[in-house]
Each structure stands twice: as structure tokens, then as C-alpha cells.
Image (cartoon, rainbow, N blue to C red; front, side):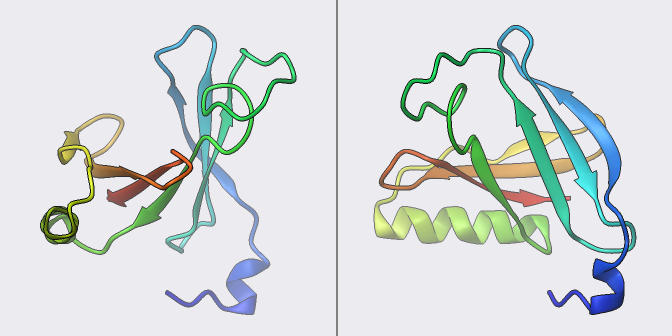
Length: 116
């Protein structure tokens, strides 16, 4: 995907707030209108200055969009062929239809492939 300079001059707008399972945590999902650029800003109440833990300090996760839901199936098959552990494809309907496939990098950071 290419984002033009004109598109970059637009401001992000809040799309929705996604509560996390742990008490008090949430993500504010922002979008540059008219683009496929989304950013989720996560807040976790648990933090005592310790080293990285995805629900406290550091990068919570990185989400990358795919064009079609079938791309998630292809990724799952590719990861299976490489022997890389991953989640099942998770289909969600609220607040809008989307699906995710989760894999973790060698540092255990969650990488989320997402179709909307």
C-alpha cells in the first residue's frame, strides 16, 4: 500500500475503543480516513518500571493487514509448512467483522495478521 503526501496531511480519527480482558486496560484504534492506515494505542494499568511484558511495558503487539480473509488461510498453511506455531484464525463480528491470525516472533512479541 502506498500513502501519498496528501493523505499523510490528514489527522487520525478515533474508530473505536477495545477493552482488554485485564482490569482497566484498553486500546484506542485510530485511522487516517480514506486510507488503510490504522494505529492501536494500548493502555495497560499494570506497570512498575520492569522489563518488557506485553501487558505492562514495551510493545504490546504489531498488527499487519491482509487484503482478503483467505490470505489468513494461506498464511496459516505457510506457517504450518515451516513448523511455526500460530493461533487458529479468530473471526470476530463486533464492533465490525474482522479476523486475525497470531504468531509470535523469537522475542515472544505478538504479530497479528488482520483482515477487515
